[in-house]
Length: 606
Image 1 (cartoon, helix red, strand yellow):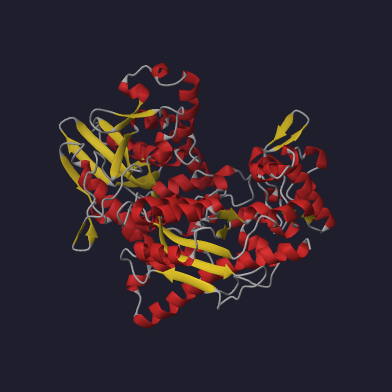
Image 2 (cartoon, rainbow, N blue to C red):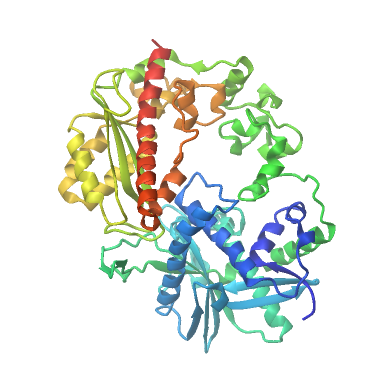
């Protein structure tokens, strides 16, 4: 076919982000070859898949742009398993011959030359039958985000008689029997936003369609092709059946672990857009212009984000304003946060005070100007007065595995493998080591019952349980209560007695209204320090009240904790013993940090 610049699907998606990406990727040094290395392609795809996995696992996002080896080694087996399951289960829904493999080498490939650029893609699951071809792209996400599109009662997607999900219009259904047409169209439009949580997967397979159809066209071999996403089924509940230590994901209550969504019509709508994107990519490659360009939401997940965002100050940037994604107003004129950055307004103080239409933003700005914290003394005092002793500081560590590992779990269940508990016997009396109790699973066998039993033995029925951001711990307690009915009443009592320390720092409208505050005052935060930079995470709050630090800890954040636990089976005995202890220390730090913050707040308003 001659010598052409070879670009994978992943590179196309990234190169089309902005004019600068190609030049920063140092394309000049790449070999102009008619065939890109399959090894290079596989590496690109693996990094993308790990990003997908951890994006699904952590709602607050995980920066894996550099693709650390331990993350790859830890998470790739789970993705490979999802991919193989999708291929095996597909035969229930599609007839004909299949080609799929966890190895990119054995997958069906397509390539097309457009404007002297060769585009290449591999197909996760290739199915050919008498009716044509089915291209199935496997993604490490769940169907929940797609089924949640629509009205409260109905989704814009509906399962057809063949068990596959389709858009209502593709089933020739009257949309207004399910929801108002404007609701349907508004939700469907999210599928076309390549940077939305649902649209990014649609765009990915649409690029694949673009390459496949141009390949077929060049060979005068156009066939009838349908396109599908294969994703995890959030309704699937594992029954705990194993064979030779491996979980068996059979059909349960009519649900398979993998479900399939027909995106043929949606991707067709995107073909013109992707052609225009290919023209932009061609221009970017020809220009190789590495100069600055405007930033925007397309920068999220980009490996060059840190370089492009260096125009923002390290502290007190405009992005430190809470709810900055809603923009800012000057009278009736609304300004998008990225438009403001691109116009040179990069710090909090660059935004005129009359553009701050949210009271919390005004307080944030005043704290930066004065260098002093904002404290609502009466609200903090009243919040602290609700705390009862002895006080039990609780924190869970979990592994949100793509595939359910134990009975009662679903895909991405936050499977609890560790808890830490500090008991503050009386006000201000709590020792880091002596008053600490905890449980950490020793391996990947199901230790949840032992964990639950120990937790229930340590916490008395009427004891107050302190957590930081209670939605997480409350959800885990509720899940465990229904998985282990013999401890249900006890776990639900513990859940009922949870008190959220964040409510004293950040505030909670319903709590403070119940204490007699007006709605306006109740919804305001209670404490804000300029060093928090818009974040109320305990790691931001802790340094304001204590010398306790996570810096220098071998396991110092939730992702590192998850990776450490996930790596237990592969560790040598000495490494395992060392890492096990470091994981104990990390979780212990989390609960002692709550004690330190509470004590600091208490001293601040004394």
